[in-house]
Image (cartoon, rainbow, N blue to C red; front, side, top):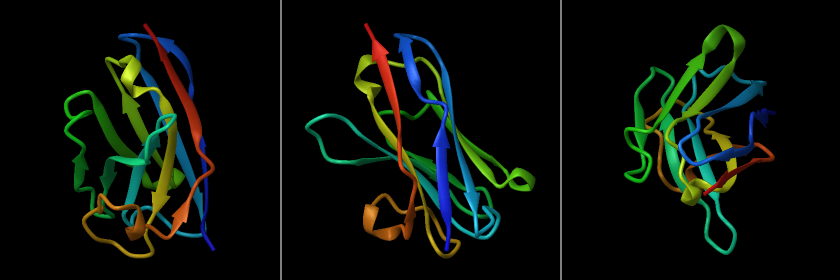
Length: 124
């Protein structure tokens, strides 16, 4: 069983930065793909970005160039560094893990384990 715990959310102003963390137990990030998703009020959950076990990353067009995903394998923690935040980035952010290593899919159904989410609010 894999458990994921996100942290690092909060309330920030437009243009600020935040770093979200996703700590995993049960599987190591070096052997699985993981993804970050977000869900804004009244909207469906959407893919933000992901990283494979070998370190390949992909991002949604809406965050490309502003967000960066990386991981510390020895800490079994993955991170979502968010820069130049905009009000439209306001959402609950979730990390998710697949049971195998692959290119991180953009579809929710590709992931086996999910964290509880952390709120990010960007004020204008």
